[in-house]
Length: 231
Ligand SMILES: O=C(O)CCC(=O)C(=O)O
Ligand SMILES: [Fe+2]
Image 1 (tube, rainbow, N blue to C red):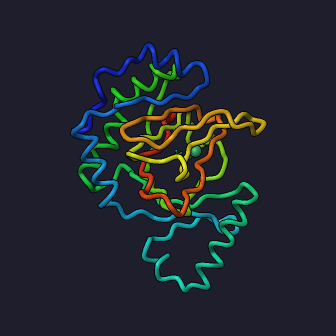
Image 2 (cartoon, protein in one colour; image 1 turned 60 degrees about the vertical axis):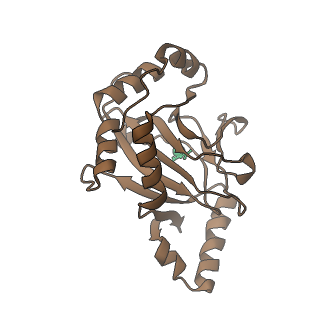
């Protein structure tokens, strides 16, 4: 069963969140749900590799990328990196969970994150009232993946709070995949390291990025990410 840790200290977390509109919550899920999700993320998800090409949003399966000719793959990589050099774009594996999800555990996860218990906790920690729903995706960053600097504001969805549940034990900062936060003028202010059973929450207005995962990373960076919305 997926369940939040009952000992979360909301009052302290709210005080901490209020300082910079971001926070990491340790040991956030009870063990049973946490370990089931960890296994699922590693072994059972048909991630699609998302990137943008000439302004178009594309998602390719692992097989599609594997079966590309070396020339085509090189050209694709070159374009992705060319855009990234200008601070535009992303390349990472994602799987979106919707209301129609068939997998039992993922359905439970979606419903739990959209339920009153979680929405109330997020409201209490962040001080943002009126949260109504959660958009949820599973993400995987392998070597070569990244997400350039952006914010998560999306008025059509009324996103308010971004979340990242980390499922990445024993990560080394040299491996990249670091969640960086910036001032509006681009100054780097804080970095959240990939961790396991940790929930990162932040205001969607804060500029942030996920740094390039290096070729020598010994693991993939797995997360459940998304947004708590006001509608
Ligand atoms: O995975 C993360 O740490 C952040 C992801 C993110 O910024 C996004 O998906 O918009
Ligand atoms: Fe983001």
